[in-house]
Amino acid sequence: MHDVDTLTKKTALIGEALPNIPWEPKPENCKGVVWRHSANPVVDINPFPKARGVYNSCVLPWKGKFIGVFRADWHCMTPHLHFGTSDDAINWKFDEEPIQFISPDPALGELTFAYDPRVCKIEDKYYITWCNNYYGPTIGQAWTKDFKTFHQLENAFLPYNRNGVLFPKKIRDKYVMLSRPMGLGMAINYGDIFYSESPDLIYWGKHRIVFTRGPRKWERVKIGPGPIPIETTEGWLLLYHGVADTCSGFIYSMGAALLDLDEPWKVLYRCQFPIMTPEAIYETAGSVDNVIFPTSVLTDGETGRMAIFYGAADTYSAVAYANVDEIIAYVKDNAWK
Ligand code: BMA
Image 1 (cartoon, rainbow, N blue to C red):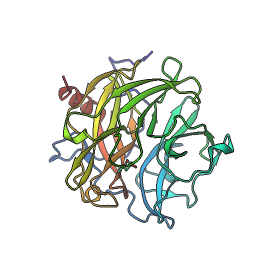
Image 2: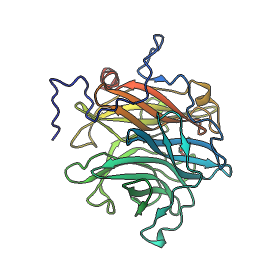
Image 3: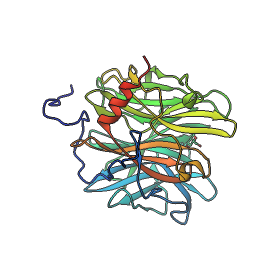
Image 4: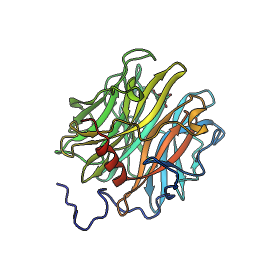
């Protein structure tokens, strides 16, 4: 199933080369496996007239350049999905108007809010999933081939759910999604990561727990899947967010785990420690302080380089760098036994 020549390949990453991936080498004083882009945030506050903040968004390579589907919080604080373009995946231009979806059924209602999009290429289509409103937050789905016409699909699940993250290929002939069911409100029914599969992206079932909140404080309140899982010879590399509770509010950090390639609800290794926590001022101070929320990764299949896009403090978009092989080694060395 995974026809990779592991003898000649330099990295465990299974994927296409991306020679123009944004990249900066690891600074000598960096002690971790993830380091920040030197000119963060890459999207500052008030990036275009309608938007106060663009964050928790998803970028991807497109015809030698880059495009993305972005969460833009308008000044009224309602989040909408906007399309954006970039030559280098660092400097972004955004469409002033939100993405319009062609609805399959008026009964789905209007998009009153839409946030935290992920974009996943499966075969010849790009699928967008996001947190959609249907009597509460649930997982909206749509597809496009050209990023001009967007076809909405049925919501994947009943409310309440957030963070619907597709896998970039069918597994045993099924579409596969990770999600984080969660109740309404801030203080009850916190979330864990579940696996679901579907023959057609309409009917989702075979729900399995992947993993629950961790025993350690950094992820004891709730967890949720982050970017589209990254295929490697060692398993699916899943970056996720984990949330701690403190006297002055929540802290959102980034964690990592490796999931079985053919049965992704099975966890091979789960790192005990976060691989990145809020430290920079644009992560510790904003609309919501102390938030790192990873939603997208560009990868270079040639070198194993990763450019991680994350929302910072619910206000900014930022980039961090890592190497797949270094993260895999760290996750294995520090996994729960
Ligand atoms: C989560 C989501 C994210 C947000 C985070 C921190 O529940 O709503 O969009 O970044 O909280 O506020």
